[in-house]
Length: 99
Image (cartoon, one colour):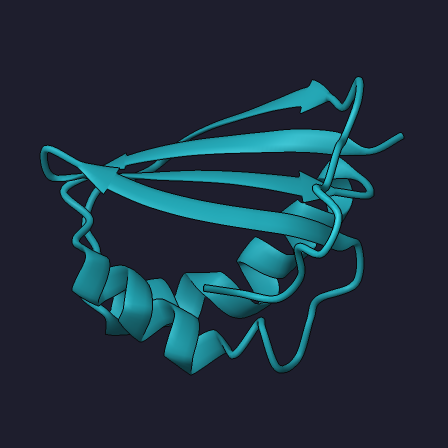
C-alpha cells in the first residue's frame, strides 16, 4: 500500500537541501518505490512530503543514499518523520517533471 511520508527538519536551509539533492541525484537515479516529492521551507525549517510505494522503500533510500549526503551537507539534528496510508492522489493534466 502506498504511503505519504512527511518530514519536518528544523534548521535545514534550501542550500543544504540542494546540496543533498545534488549529491544523491534522486531525480536522475530515481529510487525504487518513489512516486512524488515536494519540498518547501519556512522560518528556518524544511518540510518534505513524499509518496512512496511502501514505507520500507523510503527507509531503504534514506539509509542507503540520503544519510551520507546529509552528513556531508552539514545538516544537524534529526528530522521528525511520519507515515500515513495514501488515500487518494491527483495529478493535474499536463503536470510532469520537477521545478
